[in-house]
Image (cartoon, rainbow, N blue to C red; front, top):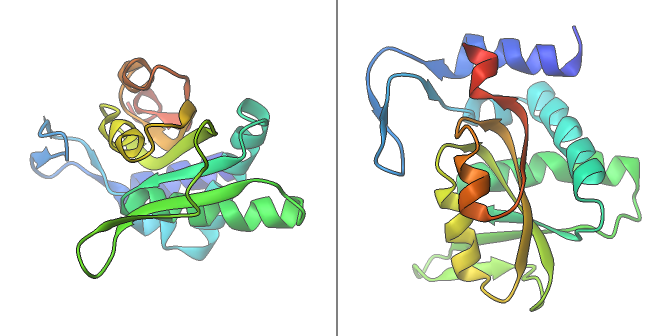
Length: 176
């Protein structure tokens, strides 16, 4: 099996939940939920996903230096990309950023992109593009040139919300 097939099978076996209705962060209820934390906390599948996402980042958004986002999914994806990005070119100019709440409950940006920077927002799954908008609310002086996810279940809505292309390893149609 190739990388994409291995990840697909892992998602089907360990990350896809269809036993009840689940409420997404956007408030939408779905009967087909994808919890990719298991995928991203498994050494093999996290690394394989990171390699595929790094390749997409390089091919689709090569000029963009900063990548990251807000939330656990984004943090795990950012970390999964960093290893393959470093291995491929240990002089990489790309810089990961992270937006998260500190111990005092204040949102902080690690490796904050300077104003005017082109950024690629990363996440594990997108359904509505809400996390892309949340990321941009913390970086209003940056330009989002795209989104990068393992699974795009939005059928194009996330790209419309972001106003930029969203690239993914899989779409929801890959699981129907």
